[in-house]
Length: 398
Image (cartoon, rainbow, N blue to C red; front, side, top):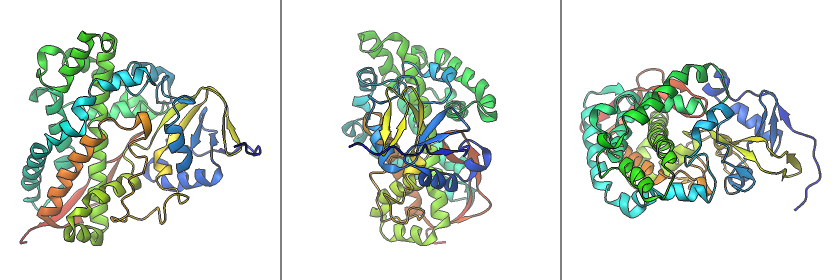
């Protein structure tokens, strides 16, 4: 359907400025009000801020391509080449298939009991203290333990992973102070992947070994092994950690909602989806247009970097009623926090299983969660999470 041409919506909002990263939601609301597609004058880029268009673009890799990389800076997008992130079908399909069997629901179901047991033990060991940091003592430890084990990493090779992930996600944004500070981490990640994640260091039944085996069979190019391993190491941990930490903060700030969960634990899945919608752990990624694209009368030129703002889409009042509220019964399963379409998060089944395990253990073992100090935001160009979340809890019978 053709739309009448509209005046070009523009905005001077800097989505990567410190004050905006601390609280992005007023700026995102301003962008949604500005138009269906908005040119960002602070950068050589556009943004799609509304749900309908973000979801449509995620499903349209022919016009909104990931092949050039999903970050802003071309110099860093080059490093993504050969990964599931920086590819479109058919290459993306082939790369994603390498671990599709291990990430399928049937395979994950076999891990459920083991992951739940790890979560129960870790939560029990943590909450017995009464007061602790829900990020550093729980949310940051659990996914590293689970994912590093599945990848097949030895115990002594796991410590640097969180630093690498934070630095890698910073490089998806524009070259600012955070990006510059992350450059050494990016170099260390590259060295780690090529020296530590080699066959001799990996468990033969782990995911990383499966990637090497796919290259041996000729299913993927040998040059794709390291980028694929990097994508799974980075994406498999940091966003899950952020999602768990963000959810615990919402529990602390909404005690009535937490008590709803305590009364009806079957709401946990719905509550976690609501947390993903409200505080999207990945705020958005870039695409590049392959041709001019008309969006409700606004034409985005060809060969243009376009930020698909998951965070904005997930709070769009055109889609959601009372979008700023944390409603544990909403169950917004059509949010875009984990992407959508062919580029939907490959590990989202595992991420949900991990989150449900640790948050479910918390709900069962802890009768209340209260803030014991001010939460500290971890500012990152792409991800939204916490560096610290001091809490005090009451355990069963206390």
